[in-house]
Length: 127
Image (cartoon, rainbow, N blue to C red; front, side, top):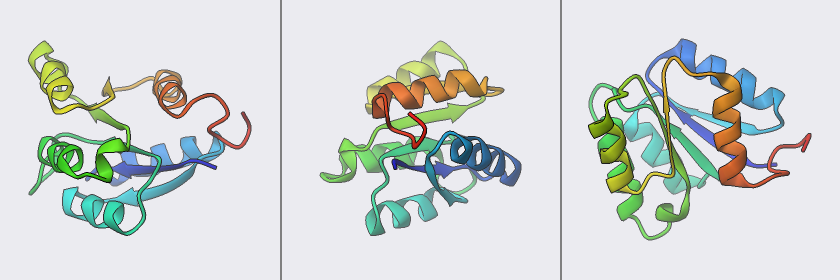
C-alpha cells in the first residue's frame, strides 16, 4: 500500500484528504506545517507528498525546495495543492521540480488521477 503525506495547515482539508485517500486504499500521514512535514519525511519517507503552499512559518515553496535539495527526499513525488493558480505560481512549482500542481478548490477525482499517475496504476489497495 502506498503512503501519502498530506501537509496542510487547515484541519478540514487534511481530514477531507485523509478520508478520500484512505477510501482509495492509500495509507495516509498528516503534517500540520512545513517543519512537521520535513521531520516526518526524515523519519519515514512517504511515497508521495501533497503539499499546501500557503502555510504559516515555512511555506510550501520552502518545503518543496528543501525536499528537492535533499538527496533522499528528492525522489519523492511532490504535488502542490494550493489556491495559488497564477501561471507564475505553476512555473515556480515546475522550477522547484515538483511533479504535480492542483489548485483549490480541487476535484477529488482530478487529484486522485494525478496521484495515480505519479505512483503508477495499482498504487492503492483496490487497484
